[in-house]
Picture 1 (cartoon, rainbow, N blue to C red):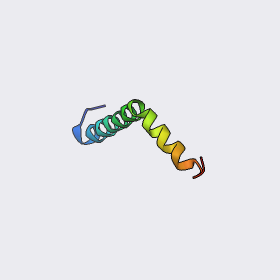
Picture 2: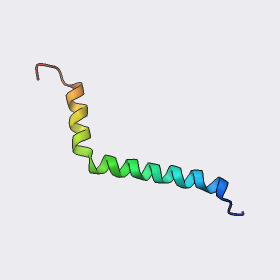
Picture 3: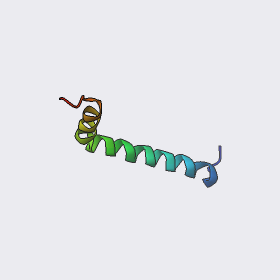
Picture 4: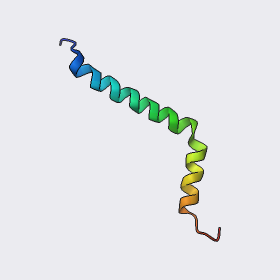
Length: 45
């Protein structure tokens, strides 16, 4: 198997984007969880 950039770059980019989103969700988990709970809660609560 030879290493060629046109094949590797999209995979590297997708991996970096997935890692960035994962880190964002982990570090901002409390705010995301509160936002989901407020969206699902009734107005009276």
